[in-house]
Each structure stands twice: as C-alpha cells, then as structure tokens.
Picture (cartoon, rainbow, N blue to C red):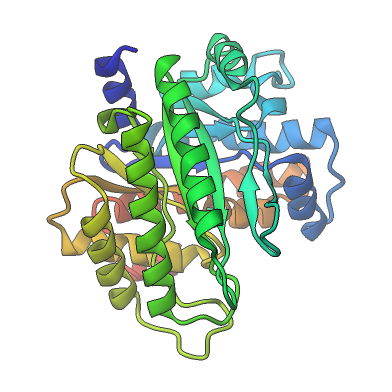
Length: 340
Ligand code: 13P
C-alpha cells in the first residue's frame, strides 16, 4: 500500500470547488431512469448518455473531481472510439468504479439487506486498476422502519464495508465508504440522527479492526433528514447543523473528505444543505458531494434521448455541477438558481 498516493487521490476527490459525479447506476437503475424520460436502455443509449456527460468540458474540468462508473461503462468506448475512461482523464477528472454487487436480502432479517461482492474482489480490483480506476465505491443500505435496523444488519454491513476498504487500499485504490441510511419512510429527523450515528460508529470501529488507513478513504454518508413521508419537515439550516454535529461525533479528522450522497433529495435541496454546512464552517474534513440523482435528473430530462438536445443536457449538467461546486465552498446563493 502506498498511503501517500492514496491520500493524494482522496484529496483530489474532494478538491475545493469540486465533487464526484456518481454515474454508476446498475442496469436496473439506469433502465428506471431512462423509462422516466422515454428512452430505451441499450448499451448504445447508455453509452451516448454517459458520453454526453463526460464531454461536458466545463462541468467536468471545473467542478467534477471524479466519476464513479459501472462495470459496463469502464469498458466502453465513445462513438469515435475513445475509451470513456480517457474522456474523464482528459477533463482532469479521476475515474472510479462501483465494485459492490448490490444489496441482497439478509438472512433472518426481514426487510433488511446486506451488500454482496467480497468474493473474488481482490482479482476484480486488479482488473479495474488496469482499466484506469483510481478509486472504488461500495454502498451499504440501512433502512429505517418498525423494529429496524437490527444490530445484525448494521454490524454485517459495517464489517463488509471494512473488508472492502482494506482490499482496496491493499491494491492502492481509494475506497469510498458509503453507509447509506435511507430517507424512505415516515420516521422523523431524530430517528434518522440516532440510526446514522449508530451506523457511523459501527463503520469506523470496523475500519479500525480491518486496519484501514483513514487518510486514504473518502466517506460518503447520508445527510440527517426526516423520512420523505414524515409529516414534520425541517429547514435546511437544521439539517446542516445536525448532520455536522453527528459527523463530528463519529468521523475522525484523519479522513480527508466527506462526499454526501443525494439520496432522493431534490436537486436544489441537496445543493442548499451542502452549502449550509460549508457556511457553518470549521469542519476538520472537506465537505463535498458525490451525487447521482441531484446531478443527473436535470440533464436526463433535458436530453430525453435526442441528439438535438445534447447541448441543452450539457448546459443543465454544467449548471448543477457549478451550483454544487459553489456549495462545496459555502458560496452558493439561491438567486443563482433563478438566474439560470
Ligand atoms: P444519489 O446521489 O442519487 O443518492 O446516488 C449516489 C450514489 O452513488 C448512491 O450509491
């Protein structure tokens, strides 16, 4: 393991004014997104769509530090034959890869999942590194509901995340450690806070047992928000304040950066809350983004599968990338959204 190199890449992933584009939707998820905009999901349409994003020169160069790819995409070539990975590198962004194999039902824990993909992971990491990946992602999913999450679910997922992270570091790849507490359901903000704190504590304990070096990871957590169906929604300021408070309790300052997932928040909510955290300031780590939906919903809608809409889709992507880049510095203003 070359910890200095891992630390360099981790810092680049959360460089000031930049964040990560999560474009690693699995086959099923991208199909769902394409169906919503009336586009058939084929290897060509998926390639065309992702090529459009990676060729958005200004967004990529100025605001996207890294891109998380899916297995199919890291092997794909643009229409002119250039590997998509090259397009990302040419924009000065770092290619990464989702390496988990998805959340599967956890035995004896109805309604809960364990993320799979550890078997054979070392060999897959070597292959991905040779394909150009510099970092990886593994997502653990924790749902909140009556009687859940169980200790078994939290502990099993934390343990798997730590085993994944150690394997990545051994292969000189920066692990994005993503324990996502879902915002589905009607639970209130305090319940999200309590569960997130428990999950983060478990994850960092397991990372320690697995000998993972915190200077060489990026943490990708959820923000502390009320469930989508909770009657009591709260202000962006309260979300920012509670999220920061919990992360300070749980995340050692050796971690270079925290890149939030958007998790179903609206585009502007995800931006406003990240900005609010950076306006509070004083955090020992960089606070940035690793958004999927909050960066891509607008360009997907603008594109709709039509070649004639590529420029409009790139503009929409560039706008969200810039807004989130500013939020990562605490320099976003709501009026900037209206102006656009
Ligand atoms: P969302 O920002 O859409 O939650 O996606 C981020 C991600 O990579 C989830 O694993």
